[in-house]
Length: 214
Image 1 (cartoon, one colour):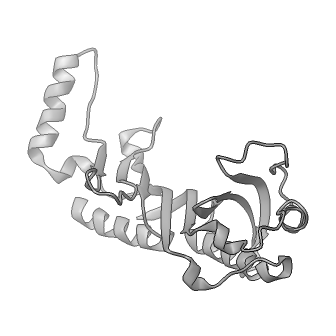
Image 2 (cartoon, helix red, strand yellow):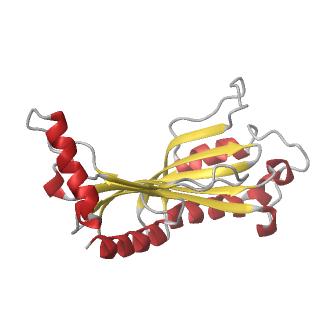
Image 3 (cartoon, rainbow, N blue to C red):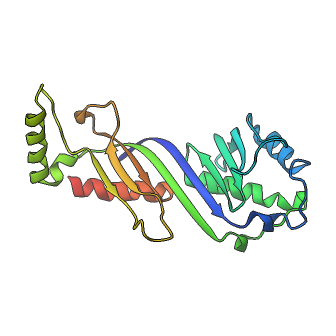
């Protein structure tokens, strides 16, 4: 499995954000301006904005530990903090940790144990050496039958695999998806995939899937 590009890497820290601000300081007085300046956010919340859907900071710049400049997004909700990049969930995590370490400078509190749970989401474009048609001869034959039924020189193949968590449970992480990249030929073997995993774990799992399909 070869990585083509990272469409989305997301790290979420689930926490009671009020615990970060025990004194109830005005975040717009110093903390928010510092974030905007340090990470060059081009879109950021204003005092008069409706913040019930979170404080959103967009089109920022973060230099990771490798010295690479990355575009970042940050949203602060009442029950957690979310960071997005197009690099890796590791970079998202480093970005959040860097911000958290500055909290004491603004009379905010932070300790690792305040984070109740960490979630990840990874969306990747990859190249796979195998095609899903090989996974089951009966499904391959069904694709032929479907093509004949539709006619007009149509050609159908199995093009997506989905694994969902139990929707009756309270904790429902994102689904795992592996599907043909829209607008590409079957022979291109290019796929889009999503998993509720760190980026490196997602790639490792896709390598296992490639072996199953081969």
